[in-house]
Image 1: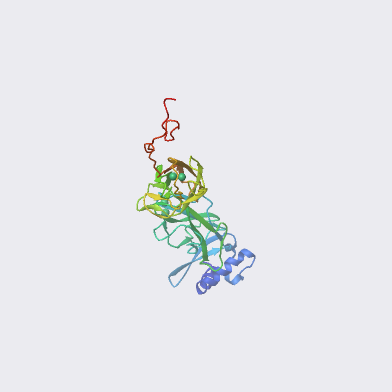
Image 2 (image 1 turned 135 degrees about the vertical axis):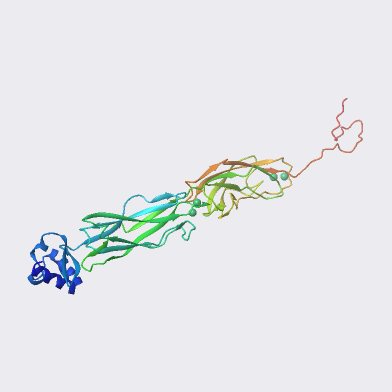
Length: 349
Ligand SMILES: [Ca+2]
Ligand SMILES: [Ca+2]
Ligand SMILES: [Ca+2]
Ligand SMILES: [Ca+2]
């Protein structure tokens, strides 16, 4: 071993961190003094020198360049069906050079705000994770990938697509001469695609007595492929509109116009709407049964892609509650010269 090499090793052992810092700066045209630097180090960008003193061996890495690393999410799509067990999200580190032996760069992959899915195992499970790239991972200039997993919880809730937002934060470089950055994209939304569906039907055609107001609701039948309690997590509405019939609006019933049928959140495979009332006018007119035709449409919800309308027309019958009895008038007598008025016609004249 040359004296200059031994001297360098000694210097490095006394202040390894300082050496590495100076060596890194050499990439920006700052050179070490001849006493602590020998010419061969300036050639190879990464090399290890062994030196011994008193039987011990230490290694010092020659690092000709600062390493700059930039973390970002990969740009691959991040949607996953609710039935998927896990969704893997990749994080890339783009490095300008290999990390020095023993050096690391790390970044936290944390839950960000604004996601619509519920954690804690309801819609998903995720724990903030630190990804650490070592010198064994980053072996040169280039892009290197590690990943985190979001565990998705399948359910039987009709709820719409939901999102989990991940963010990159708190990047670090173990070597003070290296630089870790966060680039773009630094956020990633994982969309959990809901796999429940629903079908809305009007209730069966209904008949109600003229003296009774009647509800004209619809039902939402939910089906899915998950497990657990079935139900609706997002309220939705449809419009029910009067479209005809033999009854007279404003006379036989209060103008129905267009009413909103609301399906409120709740549990159950079938959810019944509310708020639709046919306000029947009780009169004293003998008129026979009459009808009011309704139709439903205008589904208004974020669930519009999952819910379909079926049996969209409906007839409500108003059952007349007047009755009549026809009787001959009382027996009558009339002079032969006068026509009777009781509906008895002379058959002779
Ligand atoms: Ca869910
Ligand atoms: Ca669901
Ligand atoms: Ca009437
Ligand atoms: Ca009547």
